[in-house]
Image (cartoon, rainbow, N blue to C red):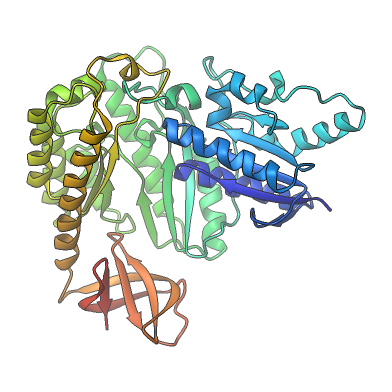
Length: 455
């Protein structure tokens, strides 16, 4: 029995696909071991969203080969897709598998070992293991019956992106939008609910585009396209809402333009949908947004947030922000900071712009020095810390619903830790195992700055 060690880098979509690949390997009789142990096969699911991600991918591949030189090291995913020549020249990589080929992992491994016995594996890349995602390709169907977590499961509903933001390599790594069949998503969710998972998280590369590729050919204009996006995504969420045993539906990152009053009112009629919305912003300055090719302006984004708060009251609104984008002047940065202060997010993920080869932004003039990026990042991280604490504080004195997930020991006391519907961490002091139970408790204090204490 061959021992396989797996390591995942990158986004929630990568995590979903890694779980699916592990499940396929287990079904074929492979023995899964921790990545830190010796194995016959090391599989690294790579990321390429930044140059740093590329470097981390290479480091993990090289670490695996160093740990056991005669092991088969397999590079999988986005880095393989965007750096074919570098991967082919890398002597630490024995086999490379691109995106939209992950479901063929076990078959590719079997063929690889058969060819190696014949002495025929003299190249790391073969056309069969790297799909050309520049052409129209079908959605790669992978299915999960279980995940490493025991309470919450991610469900991938689409792949690819058509947005082409000027800083982003992902449309080249993942290809164009490809939506998963509605029936397959619902079937997977039904299986996860039957297995005891109480919450599912809808994820994808650009889930707001779900169903655009299903739409009739020939539609024109952004209004028609946005209408299609809403209809297909709403239909899917309504279908998931009807699944018996499923208690919570959490939606992954949304494009701000999909937020309309009709869309949000429709979601609000579905009590299983969590009031937690991640709307990617990237900048609060219109000039910067235009250079980023983000397709909306700050004022439009603000209107979308107001719709969510008017209908949901106190939803958790989270976002991403890039600092130090090419040409971002001090005035533009101050505009972004003022906008973030105006919105008051629950959480912000602050990223220092990384010059990504192959994107339009990498060729722009006025690249910002690292010192400027670091200073601006520190300023926004401090703002994020204050806003996040202020949002958590609004729950004190209220009854909150928590899905408990794990037990921790702190200062000699045992606590169950879980998340509210808004994805706020909460703790309850008890020796009982409340894992995978949804319980309503009264929020009284903070156990730590980022954990609400309930009783």
